Amino acid sequence: MSDAPENVVEYVTATVGGQLFGLPISRVQDVFAPDRLTRVPLAPPEIAGLLNLRGRIVTAIDLRRRLGLEALAGNAPRMAVGVEWKGESYGLLIDVIGEVLKLPTSDREDNPVNLDPGLAQVSAGVHRLDGRLLVILDVDRVLDIAPRSEAA
Image (tube, rainbow, N blue to C red; front, side, top):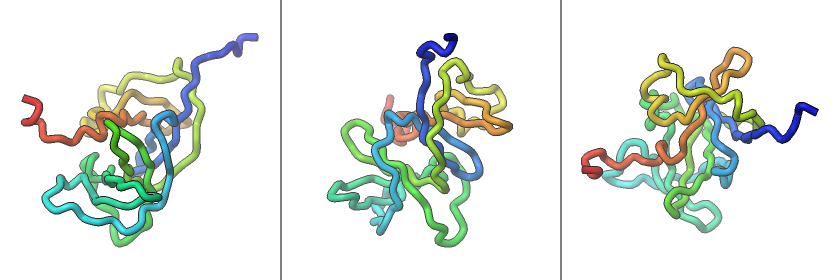
């Protein structure tokens, strides 16, 4: 059979600002509806606040702000994808959670040259799906929001 164990990656899909994203399922811990965010004074705008998720303190990151998009109008319900980075728990605030897709690694492409620079900064590649572009989020780059001056 030609369907020998091809390398396949599973992605949790999410939509932010009309763009379809895929997060490697190996990085996803939870999918939840965030409740009662506590603002953090003097935090960067990407940090929406802190929340308590089953006894854990989770930092909520607003992916809309992280990607340079406008905030959602009104109090539209949002979802969050729980991930861990450097031993800390984070919730990536998204607009809509999608499904889990199994995609062959052979179909993964490098970022197109015309990909929005903000997306390219946090993208680990793309998959073309029936007229839509699935941008694979590099969770490490999404969460690296420290000011660039600290790197010097």
